[in-house]
Amino acid sequence: MILAYSTNAFTKYPLVEALNHIADLGYSGVEILCERPHWYPPETGFTQVDQVIEVLSQRNLKVSNLNANTANSFFSSCPPENTFEPALTNINRDIRLQREGIVKQAIKLADRVGASCISVTSGSPTPGCLPEKAVALFVDSLKSICDFAENYAINVGIEYEPGLIIERSDEVCELIHQVGSPRLGVNLDIGHSYLSRENPEKTIENLAGRIWNVHVEDIKGMKHFHLPPGEGDLPFQQYLHAFKKINYSGFLTVELYSFPDQPIEVGSKAHDYLSNLLGVIVE
Image 1 (tube, rainbow, N blue to C red):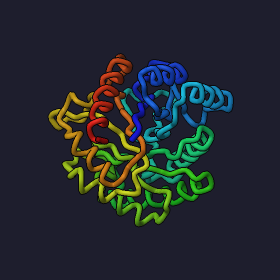
Image 2: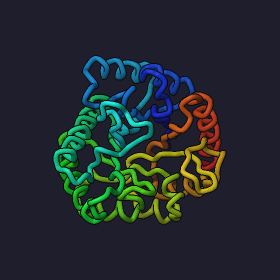
Image 3: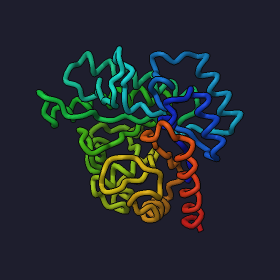
Image 4: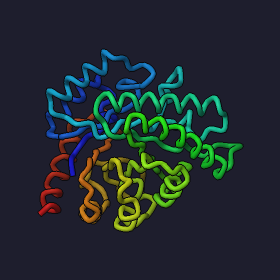
């Protein structure tokens, strides 16, 4: 398993500077946030991409994932908190198609930087749209996105989260079945899974072969606030043993957007904790 760090912890830094900090911390991988100030797909040009490719090569960094979970930058004035609109479950077809377009642009960016996957979410329940209708709309959007992703050999990972339309692993498994694409899997956030009170071994076993990337953070007191691993209640050894059992050898991507003023400090703590733990698990 390979340690990566998401640039969504570095929203007060330009992307190239964030990449260098992540490399300095000892990470082998990086997840790129598909939002301002980093890579909002409709605004990301060839020059920016080439600069990033050069830094990735110089610093020997691999891209674990392109995080297209939100599209705050779609709005003329970014909301104060993350919003999942315009969502792939929005009842308005025009809005939904605009989000599909943003995701497809992220797929092209993933291809350019050698990433194997991008991640998306379902969005939140909205007034006037029953959850079952929202799921049906999500399936339609995912079919279009996965067909597009097939052209680039890029995988699409659903990140489920408590409070969203898709909030449990069993719902992801059902979506994978309905969409019917080998490109569709999961961007597994173990903190979200923990908050949903899922059994680590059973969840990871059920998703085996469809886990494209793993988000890692700690959770304390069942509150959804991302903490550095080792500072909360997650049974990390249990999770890592479960990943080892299914021969998962991909990225463990630290996600600490909750510390925008301390990304280096918390990233260092996370790297030290997980490196030591992986050393024990591997042995």
